[in-house]
Length: 260
Image 1 (tube, rainbow, N blue to C red):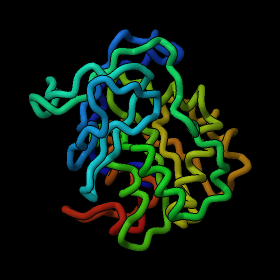
Image 2: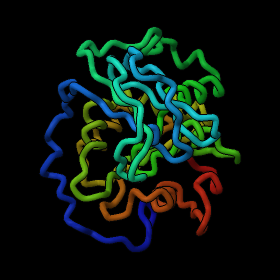
Image 3: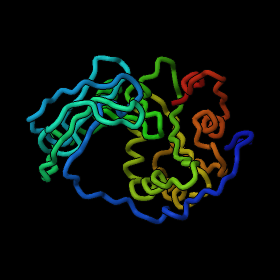
Image 4: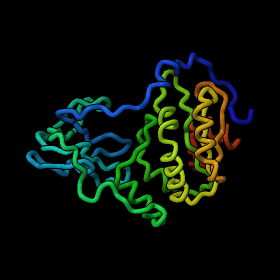
């Protein structure tokens, strides 16, 4: 049962509908509504007011709570409203509404051009915290919290299984942005202070497996693992079992078995 787990189901993966469609950048909207809760944890409080001019990447919401993720403007323009707005999880949520100016200008000092190799572990985690990075798997857990576990860990695992039917966004990222993935993995491993990493990909994505094996060929501490295609191969406890043969006990967390 190595590289898998007991049980699971085999639905039609439906990947063919979108797997060959490249990632596209949409046109700039005329207006953006940015909720102050886009993460697991405490909602943020707006740091801007109506009439302010903001730029892309500028902080517009934060919180004193430990578990939160800072919120930033997604484009440049004028703040035209700060008020509760409809929200997919909370019915309504405080939001900042920006009328885009069409320039899409970055805030001063962004993007940060400093080489990550010059930063120590704490500085990397702080940069990630300041950027408001969260997980995109559904839980939207703040990345700076995950990358600062309160127990010793020795292994970093990238969940690239994308086992859900129809989804192909991770697949396209692996094909189109493999070099950035390599850098991201190295940054996370340095932040965690670990020397072993795994990329877990279901074997219904042979092009992605091949692409990443080539991309990581000069990073021997990272192993690209092709996993049997079945749902829920991408659930974190199943993935940990598949690539490390470690078992997270009921109610436990990945760090209980040395993994992030």
